[in-house]
Amino acid sequence: QSVLTQPPSVSGAPGQRVTISCTGSSSNIGAGYYVHWYQQLPGTAPKLLIYGNSNRPSGVPDRFSGSKSGTSASLAITGLQAEDEADYYCQSYDSSLSGWVFGGGTKLTVL
Amino acid sequence: EVQLVESGGGLVQPGRSLRLSCAASGFSFDDYAMHWVRQAPGKGLEWVSGINYNSGNIGYADSVKGRFTISRDNAKNSLYLQMNSLRAEDMALYYCAKGEQQWLINYFDYWGQGTLVTVSS
Image 1 (cartoon, rainbow over the protein chains, first blue to last red):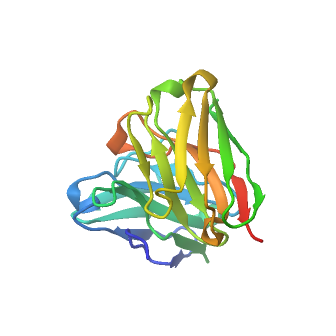
Image 2 (tube, helix red, strand yellow; image 1 turned 90 degrees about the horizontal axis):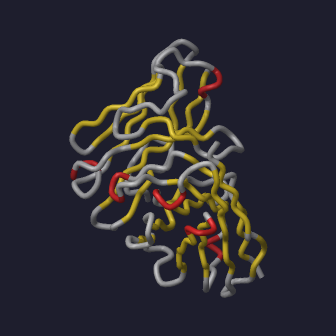
């Protein structure tokens, strides 16, 4: 059971918009700690997608965006492409655990 | 170009020890926190341990606290993870990941390719 809760899977057709939620609590997201997002393509290491709730590292397309409200955060992907098919993870800091926590991951399928 | 290269993984019996290493290059190693993150086969990501730039702040996941020890050698641009009393549930791909300068704002902007730890008799 992960501290941050994500849906196990989401899907969408090419060109569509999908969102992935990440629900935490008052000791992590709700406490004001930043949320970060990672993309893991099959057989590869994770890649930073969004940092500091809504910032994109250089090279990440603006089709990817992040937001945060209260004890939750969301990753939105617009103009879905086949190459977006991957696992996505949210991550934050938890003050009760004194450490960093990940969501359980969401598998995105492009139909 | 930032590079993180892990080594030291392998097959080990339950209860034994293993030491992982991560060689870093392409950035000012002694300015940044570093972390170990693991991924069991077919499972999600789990943060294992982190250490700040001067080893003044260190953290562990509850699942490894008291058994694993993280350390770094800034002169050698290297990160280490000493793993003792290994259990079957420690079997995973262990990633070395670069953190940030501010301890509580850490995210992992570069990752190695991982080193596989297999715990089995």
